[in-house]
Image (cartoon, rainbow, N blue to C red):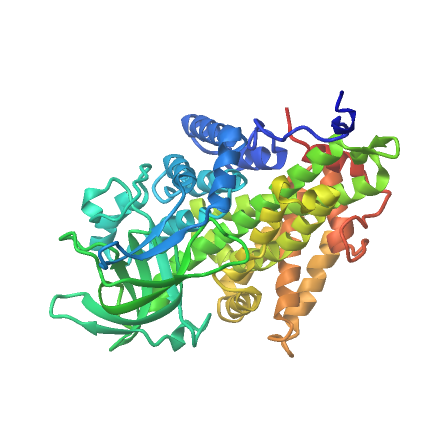
Length: 547
């Protein structure tokens, strides 16, 4: 008997085997724009790297690895069968495949290559769309480099391993490995973001720069890593230390993993509580200057929070557009129906604004001038605050575009939704970012000048952007209750920066829709409330996978 009741129709085909990089117009145009002054051979190399990575990210193999890594989360093995303490975290082979491909693609290598930050940020954006959880050790390994450069001897020893394109799993002496990963342990139970309240103590040994640490870290990121940057209280105050998992003689350092965190999302990645009890450490930088030493790492990981959230947003948009292109209702494809087109256009605006901002920040790192460093001092916390805040509602709306299909685990959207809040929390939540930007405004006038010069490049191009910039000036001139208004001020800073970039570089229909809705206030509180008079069809068409 024919199984006529099981005929499948009106379902989209699997989104697999597609071009994650070449199919993204906003991303490819942005990379080319920032590479315009690079040498021809560098431009060609970057294009080739990102194209290859994009094909891998959209492949069936990467999708399988992502599913397996999240369905088989890491497991803590505190002891071996004989009772010896080993404190190892065991991962599914798919996790190692994802990490190995990422390291091989240079996603921990930015600091010494031409256009290194741009190509790495774009690659991180592309590969994170395959699976986001393993981005944590990638990010911290990359970001450890500027902190270690506070000690030239340590930098000479570790930097070649941190920036290696070879991934080697397993705990061994660093000198026996071709590449290493780094984690970080700053947060404690009593302090949270207030790291100056840390109680982990550091006692100096006779050998110069060597200490023993004692204390408990409430959050240790990527506990399977080869080394960690840690903050502890030395006699001279809060200080930064390097803690290796394995000592040069091959013995294990005292590093007791007490438990793994049971997290909302980020399931493929391990986060832990760890105990230090006579743990050997090497000082990085001067005693009492731990925050200043580690701030370079924090700034780099905050940029990755922006890139990671932008990647989640792009992947959610891609899934929503693909579904609505192939799903029909009431006699027409969903994507052609006016209200769905409005929703998709709104999501596309949010995604493109996050993408162009990510690339602009990365290019500023590459430039390395005083002007660009001053710009980053304000732009990074503003972008980290706003882009990561917009990620969760956008992913939730994209999930709704798939209807009940999006609520089912197999669609992949639930994993994106669970992952979406993490970057807003990691490396300082919203209040921390807003207050950090406020400190820069109050203490570093060159940062504000650089920021205003950047947004001023679009002056006169759109009256709504000009009005929003004028409104920002009014906010900044009023110091009364400024701390309580910090979120409002930083949100406006991020929006005018995004508006300035889109007006200068995006197609007119994208810039017009962004300025009308985000700066001109012509929209409702939910996605899908853009003015119907805008060219929404062109905005949605741009969001489709190119090719």
